[in-house]
Image (cartoon, protein in one colour):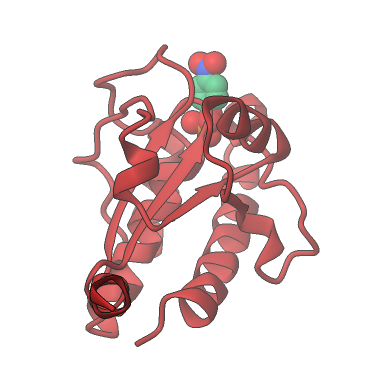
Length: 161
Ligand code: 4NP
């Protein structure tokens, strides 16, 4: 009986979302920034962060082109700092969202069994491609549009009040 009372209380208060890519400098910072913008606009009560499965960029700012494309859309991600995902994240965050299949594989290996892929929200489960390896800026615009569309649907489907 006690458990039945606590569970609904916890789930209604704790809405939290962690986006995970590889380096946490290109894609997941965009997802975090876009989600925070929507959450602010819609006055939702959701905590959002992002992280990478790799450790190469810990402490770094998002990549230049991600900061640029976000700014063009009115989203400031320049103060974010890359961090590596931790096992504690899997307890602390209600939803763990990977950006591509390799992120999902890495998350599953780390023990994040219920992680979901961002592309499953309106993009036929496609990977969000890694723009770090693209030539030029155009790829960042495409990636931004895809992330914005998927994050909007994710917030509607999973985390609306
Ligand atoms: P992200 O892109 O996973 O979207 O942040 C990457 C950025 C850097 C590296 C890998 C992925 N890297 O290997 O340095």
